[in-house]
Amino acid sequence: MNLPRGKAPAAGFVEDEGWRGESARVLLNRHELAGAFGDLGTDLPLLLGMILAAGLHASSVLIVFGCLQIVTGLWYRLPMPVQPLKAMAAIVIAQGVTPGVLYGGGLAVGCLMLILAVTGSLDALVRWLPKSVVRGVQLGVGLQLATVALTKFVQADGRVGYALAAAAFVLVLALIGNRRVPAALPVVVLGALYAAMFGPERVTLLRGFGLVLPEPRAVSVADIVAGAFLLALPQLPLSIANSVVATRQLVEDLFPERRLTARQIGFTYALMNLVAPWLGGVPVCHGSGGLAGHYAFGGRTGGSVVLYGAVFLFAGLLWGVGFEQLARSFPLPVLGILLLFEALALMSRIGDVAGDLPSLFTTLLVGVLCSSLPYGYVLGMIVGTAVTRLGWHDTWVQSSHR
Image (cartoon, rainbow, N blue to C red):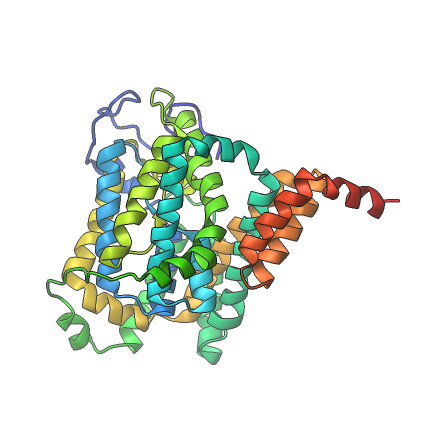
């Protein structure tokens, strides 16, 4: 998305007179409310997918996710959103990881990012990790999400499921690029209506209203070790590239008067993941895509993130049980279509290496390793970095074109 530096996008969006690029205030107005749901299409499918695949406590997930949004909006005073970690979510959804390992992975990735931020190694690692390897990790995540979406979710409910998937697919295609109605929103409404009609009885859903608090979690050392190898190491290169580097650059593009460093973003990333698992929250990050989404729909301050978080917070506190029941009845084929387009968006990131054959070779190699092998993300990261640094990717391209 190419937006003028420090300016609002035109395209029919009305600039609020109270907003100024240099303002450090948190505004709560109609423009911030419009921007609040710019990231819903990414967050909701991943949250629903993890709740269903790992059997998570829905209230805890929603409450913690909402609180982190609110704190982040107040801290940065920018539309700096909080998102589920994509690589972790893909592995959890694809492999049915237990809640303990998921929470252990969150603590592990938080510790790793904190070490990188405290020691100043984050900037050095950003320079050392080849872009082709990062793109390969994104390709691997996309391939896994697409495989799960098409083989497990879309085929889950027979003919009715195929019909729902087709309707969801058409809705997304019809609304792609629509800046007023996010494509995922009517798809989520379609799935929720179907779940409400054919899932739990209305009386059961109404009984789901009531105060629910997050459930504290105990995380063992074994869970942290398993989560580190299975989830944290595959996630780390993607987080460095997207959550830290790309987000810092986008803040500089959109808010040139605000100077954020990779270290600052790394610190809040780490702290969120060192707190969330103990309260039953899923591992999270910042994200350039979410920031662009909030901005595109009108968010100019932390107010859009605060309002967005308040929706999740109150849903978890006051309707967590009903939401969990509704989520378990949410049609998997509809969720599958949302995950499919999430996968396609991730895989399309390799476009910036497509013109360089050696880099494209490394990206494809890493993507295949990540999506096909046990601990493939770790292996893909190691092999891809070695292939690039030793120049083997150039040798392969030269020999294959003789």
